Length: 254
Image (cartoon, rainbow, N blue to C red; front, side, top):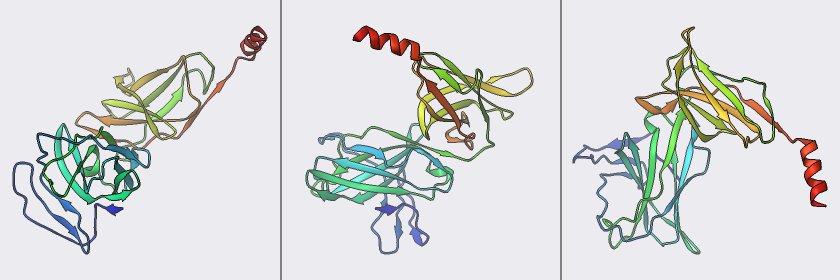
Protein backbone atom coordinates (compact mmCIF):
# COMPACT_ATOMS: atom_id res chain seq x y z
CA UNK A 1 0.00 0.00 0.00
CA UNK A 2 1.26 3.48 -0.77
CA UNK A 3 -0.05 6.95 -0.07
CA UNK A 4 -0.30 9.40 -2.94
CA UNK A 5 0.70 12.38 -0.87
CA UNK A 6 4.22 12.50 0.54
CA UNK A 7 5.69 15.23 2.71
CA UNK A 8 8.97 15.32 0.77
CA UNK A 9 8.95 15.18 -3.01
CA UNK A 10 10.26 16.81 -6.14
CA UNK A 11 8.02 17.90 -8.96
CA UNK A 12 9.09 17.79 -12.59
CA UNK A 13 7.84 20.01 -15.38
CA UNK A 14 4.46 19.21 -16.90
CA UNK A 15 4.32 18.43 -20.61
CA UNK A 16 1.79 17.15 -23.12
CA UNK A 17 -1.92 17.71 -23.50
CA UNK A 18 -2.93 15.91 -20.34
CA UNK A 19 0.34 16.67 -18.62
CA UNK A 20 3.21 14.65 -17.29
CA UNK A 21 4.24 15.44 -13.75
CA UNK A 22 6.42 13.10 -11.72
CA UNK A 23 5.86 13.06 -7.99
CA UNK A 24 8.41 10.84 -6.30
CA UNK A 25 8.40 10.35 -2.56
CA UNK A 26 11.81 9.59 -1.13
CA UNK A 27 12.56 5.91 -1.58
CA UNK A 28 9.38 5.23 -3.54
CA UNK A 29 8.50 4.47 -7.13
CA UNK A 30 5.14 6.24 -7.38
CA UNK A 31 4.77 8.04 -10.70
CA UNK A 32 2.24 10.55 -12.02
CA UNK A 33 2.20 10.34 -15.79
CA UNK A 34 0.23 11.22 -18.90
CA UNK A 35 -2.57 8.89 -19.85
CA UNK A 36 -2.43 7.38 -23.31
CA UNK A 37 -4.11 3.96 -23.07
CA UNK A 38 -3.69 1.60 -26.00
CA UNK A 39 -6.59 1.74 -28.40
CA UNK A 40 -6.58 -2.05 -28.41
CA UNK A 41 -7.19 -2.64 -24.70
CA UNK A 42 -6.86 -6.38 -25.21
CA UNK A 43 -7.11 -7.39 -21.54
CA UNK A 44 -10.22 -7.88 -19.46
CA UNK A 45 -11.06 -5.03 -17.14
CA UNK A 46 -9.92 -5.19 -13.51
CA UNK A 47 -12.20 -4.52 -10.55
CA UNK A 48 -12.00 -1.33 -8.49
CA UNK A 49 -13.48 -1.10 -5.02
CA UNK A 50 -13.24 1.28 -2.08
CA UNK A 51 -12.12 -0.42 1.13
CA UNK A 52 -13.92 2.30 3.11
CA UNK A 53 -17.23 4.03 2.30
CA UNK A 54 -16.69 6.43 -0.62
CA UNK A 55 -17.94 9.37 1.47
CA UNK A 56 -14.68 10.67 2.93
CA UNK A 57 -14.45 13.43 5.50
CA UNK A 58 -11.98 16.19 4.76
CA UNK A 59 -8.56 15.13 6.08
CA UNK A 60 -9.32 11.41 6.25
CA UNK A 61 -7.88 8.61 4.08
CA UNK A 62 -9.55 6.24 1.64
CA UNK A 63 -8.00 3.16 0.01
CA UNK A 64 -8.95 2.04 -3.49
CA UNK A 65 -8.10 -1.54 -4.40
CA UNK A 66 -7.57 -2.52 -8.04
CA UNK A 67 -7.78 -6.29 -8.48
CA UNK A 68 -7.71 -8.72 -11.42
CA UNK A 69 -7.60 -12.43 -12.19
CA UNK A 70 -4.87 -11.57 -14.72
CA UNK A 71 -1.27 -11.46 -13.42
CA UNK A 72 -0.73 -7.81 -14.30
CA UNK A 73 2.64 -6.24 -13.51
CA UNK A 74 1.30 -2.73 -13.03
CA UNK A 75 -1.98 -1.07 -12.12
CA UNK A 76 -2.85 2.48 -13.15
CA UNK A 77 -5.41 4.55 -11.29
CA UNK A 78 -6.91 7.57 -13.05
CA UNK A 79 -8.90 10.40 -11.51
CA UNK A 80 -11.49 12.34 -13.50
CA UNK A 81 -13.23 15.66 -13.02
CA UNK A 82 -16.01 16.96 -15.23
CA UNK A 83 -15.52 14.04 -17.63
CA UNK A 84 -11.79 14.61 -18.26
CA UNK A 85 -8.74 12.85 -16.83
CA UNK A 86 -7.08 15.00 -14.18
CA UNK A 87 -4.32 12.76 -12.81
CA UNK A 88 -3.02 9.21 -13.04
CA UNK A 89 -1.06 7.06 -10.63
CA UNK A 90 0.96 3.88 -11.11
CA UNK A 91 1.79 1.06 -8.68
CA UNK A 92 3.52 -2.28 -9.11
CA UNK A 93 1.09 -5.16 -8.72
CA UNK A 94 1.19 -7.62 -5.85
CA UNK A 95 0.68 -11.20 -7.03
CA UNK A 96 -1.28 -13.82 -5.14
CA UNK A 97 -2.72 -17.22 -6.00
CA UNK A 98 -5.25 -16.53 -8.71
CA UNK A 99 -4.55 -12.94 -9.59
CA UNK A 100 -2.96 -9.56 -8.86
CA UNK A 101 -3.85 -6.38 -7.01
CA UNK A 102 -2.62 -2.97 -5.86
CA UNK A 103 -3.92 -0.77 -3.06
CA UNK A 104 -3.91 2.99 -3.68
CA UNK A 105 -4.18 4.99 -0.46
CA UNK A 106 -5.45 8.54 -0.96
CA UNK A 107 -5.08 10.99 1.86
CA UNK A 108 -5.28 12.93 3.95
CA UNK A 109 -7.85 14.03 1.38
CA UNK A 110 -8.28 17.59 0.20
CA UNK A 111 -10.97 18.97 -2.14
CA UNK A 112 -8.61 18.29 -5.06
CA UNK A 113 -8.91 14.51 -4.44
CA UNK A 114 -12.67 14.46 -5.04
CA UNK A 115 -13.86 13.00 -8.34
CA UNK A 116 -14.38 9.78 -10.27
CA UNK A 117 -11.71 7.07 -10.28
CA UNK A 118 -11.07 4.13 -12.63
CA UNK A 119 -8.20 1.68 -12.90
CA UNK A 120 -6.37 -0.29 -15.60
CA UNK A 121 -3.82 -3.11 -15.68
CA UNK A 122 -0.74 -3.53 -17.88
CA UNK A 123 2.16 -5.94 -18.42
CA UNK A 124 5.88 -5.11 -18.44
CA UNK A 125 6.44 -6.39 -21.98
CA UNK A 126 3.70 -4.07 -23.33
CA UNK A 127 3.39 -1.12 -20.92
CA UNK A 128 1.43 0.99 -23.42
CA UNK A 129 -1.27 -1.64 -23.84
CA UNK A 130 -3.76 -1.16 -21.05
CA UNK A 131 -6.68 -3.32 -20.10
CA UNK A 132 -10.27 -2.25 -20.40
CA UNK A 133 -11.22 0.33 -17.80
CA UNK A 134 -12.65 -0.85 -14.51
CA UNK A 135 -16.04 0.40 -13.43
CA UNK A 136 -15.93 3.93 -11.96
CA UNK A 137 -16.01 4.84 -8.27
CA UNK A 138 -17.03 8.32 -7.12
CA UNK A 139 -15.09 9.73 -4.18
CA UNK A 140 -17.05 12.52 -2.53
CA UNK A 141 -15.31 14.71 0.04
CA UNK A 142 -17.54 15.86 2.90
CA UNK A 143 -17.16 18.60 5.47
CA UNK A 144 -16.78 21.51 3.05
CA UNK A 145 -19.92 23.53 3.82
CA UNK A 146 -22.33 24.31 6.61
CA UNK A 147 -24.37 21.39 7.90
CA UNK A 148 -28.01 21.15 6.66
CA UNK A 149 -30.90 19.72 8.69
CA UNK A 150 -32.66 16.37 8.23
CA UNK A 151 -36.10 15.54 9.61
CA UNK A 152 -38.86 12.96 9.14
CA UNK A 153 -42.23 14.55 8.40
CA UNK A 154 -44.26 11.85 10.19
CA UNK A 155 -41.66 10.90 12.77
CA UNK A 156 -38.66 8.54 12.53
CA UNK A 157 -40.73 5.34 12.55
CA UNK A 158 -42.49 3.55 9.71
CA UNK A 159 -44.43 0.31 9.31
CA UNK A 160 -42.94 -2.27 6.99
CA UNK A 161 -44.35 -1.80 3.49
CA UNK A 162 -45.29 1.85 4.00
CA UNK A 163 -43.75 5.02 2.60
CA UNK A 164 -42.06 7.82 4.50
CA UNK A 165 -40.63 11.23 3.62
CA UNK A 166 -37.34 12.67 4.83
CA UNK A 167 -36.79 16.40 4.40
CA UNK A 168 -33.34 17.94 4.02
CA UNK A 169 -33.15 21.74 4.22
CA UNK A 170 -30.63 24.54 4.64
CA UNK A 171 -30.36 28.29 4.56
CA UNK A 172 -27.49 27.89 2.05
CA UNK A 173 -28.48 27.87 -1.61
CA UNK A 174 -27.35 24.31 -2.35
CA UNK A 175 -28.12 23.03 -5.84
CA UNK A 176 -28.48 19.39 -4.75
CA UNK A 177 -29.21 17.42 -1.62
CA UNK A 178 -27.95 13.86 -1.11
CA UNK A 179 -29.07 11.12 1.27
CA UNK A 180 -26.92 8.35 2.75
CA UNK A 181 -27.68 5.35 4.98
CA UNK A 182 -25.01 4.06 7.36
CA UNK A 183 -22.44 6.28 5.64
CA UNK A 184 -23.10 4.87 2.16
CA UNK A 185 -24.76 6.93 -0.61
CA UNK A 186 -28.12 5.37 -1.40
CA UNK A 187 -28.37 6.89 -4.87
CA UNK A 188 -30.90 9.38 -3.52
CA UNK A 189 -30.19 12.91 -4.74
CA UNK A 190 -32.62 15.68 -5.53
CA UNK A 191 -32.39 19.29 -6.71
CA UNK A 192 -33.13 21.84 -4.03
CA UNK A 193 -36.31 23.91 -4.07
CA UNK A 194 -36.54 27.36 -2.51
CA UNK A 195 -39.19 27.88 0.15
CA UNK A 196 -41.14 31.06 0.80
CA UNK A 197 -39.03 31.72 3.90
CA UNK A 198 -35.84 31.75 1.81
CA UNK A 199 -34.53 28.32 2.83
CA UNK A 200 -33.81 25.48 0.39
CA UNK A 201 -34.98 21.90 0.72
CA UNK A 202 -35.62 18.53 -0.90
CA UNK A 203 -38.15 15.88 0.11
CA UNK A 204 -36.93 12.28 -0.20
CA UNK A 205 -39.76 9.78 -0.56
CA UNK A 206 -38.70 6.35 0.73
CA UNK A 207 -40.69 3.18 0.29
CA UNK A 208 -42.54 1.00 0.08
CA UNK A 209 -39.41 -0.93 1.16
CA UNK A 210 -37.66 1.24 3.76
CA UNK A 211 -34.43 0.01 5.31
CA UNK A 212 -33.85 0.73 8.98
CA UNK A 213 -30.65 2.56 9.91
CA UNK A 214 -28.97 5.90 10.39
CA UNK A 215 -29.69 8.38 7.63
CA UNK A 216 -27.80 11.60 6.91
CA UNK A 217 -28.12 14.28 4.27
CA UNK A 218 -25.62 16.56 2.57
CA UNK A 219 -25.73 19.59 0.28
CA UNK A 220 -23.61 20.30 -2.79
CA UNK A 221 -23.22 22.86 -5.55
CA UNK A 222 -23.54 22.20 -9.28
CA UNK A 223 -20.02 23.36 -10.18
CA UNK A 224 -18.39 21.03 -7.60
CA UNK A 225 -20.67 18.01 -7.42
CA UNK A 226 -18.14 15.79 -5.58
CA UNK A 227 -17.67 18.28 -2.74
CA UNK A 228 -20.39 17.87 -0.12
CA UNK A 229 -21.33 19.69 3.05
CA UNK A 230 -20.78 18.43 6.56
CA UNK A 231 -23.33 15.64 7.10
CA UNK A 232 -26.35 16.13 9.30
CA UNK A 233 -26.53 14.37 12.63
CA UNK A 234 -27.71 10.78 12.09
CA UNK A 235 -31.46 10.26 12.02
CA UNK A 236 -32.29 6.69 12.96
CA UNK A 237 -35.26 5.28 11.05
CA UNK A 238 -37.04 2.44 12.81
CA UNK A 239 -39.00 0.00 10.65
CA UNK A 240 -41.60 -2.05 12.51
CA UNK A 241 -43.42 -5.15 11.32
CA UNK A 242 -47.20 -5.33 11.29
CA UNK A 243 -47.74 -8.21 13.72
CA UNK A 244 -51.37 -8.72 12.66
CA UNK A 245 -50.37 -9.22 9.01
CA UNK A 246 -47.45 -11.43 10.01
CA UNK A 247 -49.69 -13.61 12.17
CA UNK A 248 -52.27 -13.92 9.38
CA UNK A 249 -49.61 -14.94 6.85
CA UNK A 250 -48.15 -17.47 9.29
CA UNK A 251 -51.54 -19.08 9.95
CA UNK A 252 -52.27 -19.15 6.22
CA UNK A 253 -49.07 -21.06 5.53
CA UNK A 254 -49.71 -23.64 8.27
